[in-house]
Length: 355
Image (tube, rainbow, N blue to C red):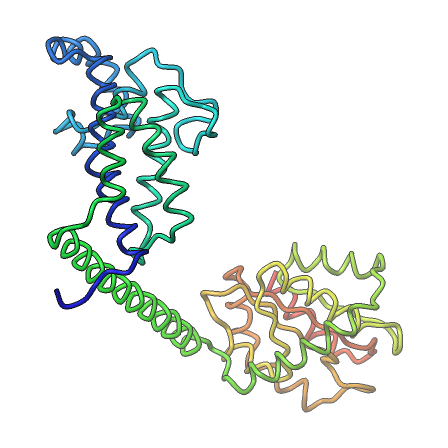
């Protein structure tokens, strides 16, 4: 042979032969006691309705239904009067529990463990502990002759055929492991690609998105010491119920703080919050596939009405109105109290056409 098996690999081979070769025969002995071969056909016909119910509940799958005979455990669990193990059939029973049903559960448990050992190795301590537990179950179900067969299997020299089978298993496990790694790599690459595609679909340029992210860090830090007021709660309620909200107040009363606090609350509820200055950005950055909140601070200038800023808005009123009517975009504005009629007229136009 090209290579020799390690002790851990030999343990795996012996455990495989025990659970795949001997244990099913021990379960078959119990099956034959519960369903005598001479009347098995009539027993199955008698329990046909029960079997169909098990199939509908997907306890028996279609391939098992077609074969039927190999599903020894399913039939013993569902068509006999055997008392189930204390903890059910899906967990390992304690060593003190040695009923036929608990031995079935014990064998099933270890078969599942074996099926998930990708490395094809079992260390000595684990091997000896599990071997004693399994062979005890086999002996109680199948009798002393099967227990003796288990004892012989534990010590006999594995022939070349057994070792070649193990090497084939090792090669298969290596291939499966490489395949899993390839699948994981593809998933990672696909996730990265999806992220890049989403970035490409973003209506906001990457550099502006980065600046907004930096602003948000500052907003969140400042918001930690914000104490919610009735005014802030009222503004939040209004922006949830309306497409536009304007916060107006005298200088120094906290319009900007409330504006940012409300924007952060809306961000937590799934809105893409975009601070803007130029009205054309509302048109450019609007994304019909996202809920968006456009945030505008000092709409009409810091201290007095800026006529140039006002005129910039007028060409975009119609487009902004159409955007607001689609119900997935909102605008929240903060501005100082002004007495200029043109400013008032602009706010009224946006509000009336956007609501």
